[in-house]
Length: 403
Ligand code: SF4
Image 1 (tube, rainbow, N blue to C red):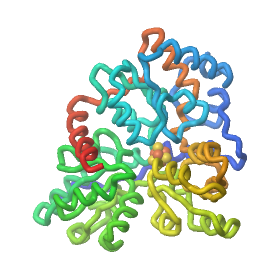
Image 2: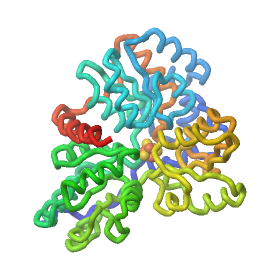
Image 3: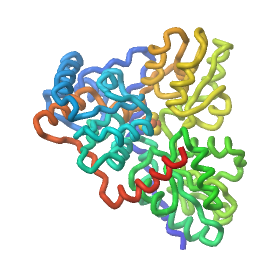
């Protein structure tokens, strides 16, 4: 019996909040946390002294607190973090690079992860048991990861096992941007974790082991990767968790090569083919470079596409005087523009929209958790249950073996 029940669709809170900090003004400077709360966001509450602290005072206090901790702590910062936070990172990177760094920082007692929840979970799985991973704001999730809730994914997996049992099954691949529970399901289900850099390699790995792939949770990365590998669009179907059998017939599932979970990134799906046309109309020599979490239409209309690290490297190595319209998160695009003053680098979307969940790591939270560590209080520890961590690390180890 198929187990998927009809469910009422819910929009993740992180997605509702997406436009809260969008602006057409170039300025994206942090204000006091109390001022940022005024737009009605639902972030973690913290002591009033931190809420009201102005940005310059926070900056000085984080500097002092960070230096007192010295080598007891390592601060990791994702490329999409605000400038006022990333400046305190000992290491910067994308989720994959930061996970590897977390695993290699064996001397640090505390890993303060300025990123989002799934990244801190991965850091906890990969770091040594004596190390403690801290996420400065516990509400810093990821709208894409929120779109694949473990109960829905387990229902889907049961359905696929039932329908495809005699037809070669499906190999689960989950993008790094997913919860530890889903990585664990991939570990015990003979599947693998992928990043935006190694997604094609994980597809090849999966097709050596099964007849089809279940790709979670980003339909766009899955579709773009499938197309790159020559898989026909008609052989890739969507799984809508709110419909019976994901909105498919049993025969659809049997005929499919790739089953794409219906999730997306609320930042990267803002980019459009029209924006690309406008950029080219204004600047015919412009190079359009986008992340593969963008839609298929945008990726196909762009000149280049690749992971965050690929975007950074491509612009760093581009000739002087070249122009780049970039389709990725605005904090990173602004930083690339500042780091490459000999090139013209700008965001494809003229409305400035940070990733709303990355933006939840306000400097006040960083200050609060660092002060706590200096006082012997560990707040906001992220700890993945042992069984989940063990199964998830199987899928993560497979990922490392195909990079
Ligand atoms: S940019 Fe998209 S995928 Fe990355 S953390 Fe933000 S919502 Fe999640």
